[in-house]
Image (cartoon, rainbow, N blue to C red; front, side):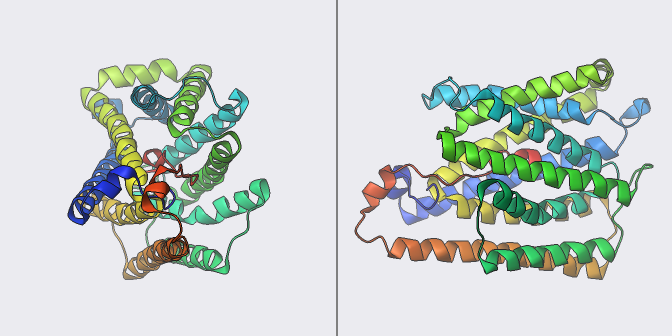
Length: 355
C-alpha cells in the first residue's frame, strides 16, 4: 500500500501472511535503525584508542551517501527505472545541500547533548516542517495537527527542563548542542519540504530521486571535506582504527538496509503503518541507549517522554482512522483497480539518516 493503496502482492496474500510480512518489515526497520543509533552514539561520544574522539562528522555523511548511491543504482536496475534525472539538477542540489548539512548538524549535536535529546528534537521537527510547508507549498493544517505538534513541543520542553541533557563527553554543553539541533531542524524541515515538491511537481520516482540526491550529496560532502582540510585526517583516522573502520561501515550498511525495509513496508502496507513503526523505533532506540550507555534520567523526564510518544501514537491513530473513512467512501472502486493505481503520498525514505 502506498498512501493508503493496497499493492497487488498484498491483495493476493492471506491475512496471516500479511501480518507476518508487516511484522518482518517493521522488525527490520526497527532493528536496523536501532543499530544505526547505537553505532552513531558510539562513534561520536566514545574515543577509539589513543587517537581520541572522532571529529569529522561530514566523513560519516559521505560514507552513508556513497553506500546509498550503490543501493539506489541496484534498485533502479531491479525496478527498471530510468537513469535520466526527472527534475532539474539544481533542485536536487538544493535538497543535497540541506541534506548533507542537516545530517552533519545531527552528528555534531551528539558531541554536546545526549542521544535521547537528539531523538526527541527530531519529533519536535514537526513544527518546523509544518511552517516550511505553509511558507513554500501554501499548505493548510487541521487543528488536530497543531494540537499534536503542541503536545510534542510541551513534552520535549518538559524533558529538556527537568533533568540532565548533556552528552557524556568532555565537551558536553547543552546550549551548544541545542544550537546544532536547531540548525538540524531548520535544514531537515527544508529537505523534507523540497523532496515533497520534487515528487509532486516532477513526478520523480523514489529511486531516481534517491540516486540523484545521494549522488550530489556525495559530491557536496566530499567537497566540504576537501575545502575544510578534513579529508586526509578523516581517512587517516579511518585506516588507523580498525574498530572505527568496522563501526563506520556497519553504520552505513545499517542505514542502507533500513531503506530496503522502509520501501517494502510502505509499498505493501502504506505510509501510516510506516509512521507507526517509526514511533515504536523511537521508543526502542531511546530505551536501548539508556540501557547500553547508562544515561541518567529523572521521573519528570520519563513523563515528558510519555507525553511525546502518546502524541505521536495519537497522530498515527488519527491518520489511520482518516484513511479508513476514505476507504469506506470509495465502494465503487474495486480492490484490484485500487491496486493498479500509483500513489502520490511521499514518505521520508532517508529516515535512516535521521536515526
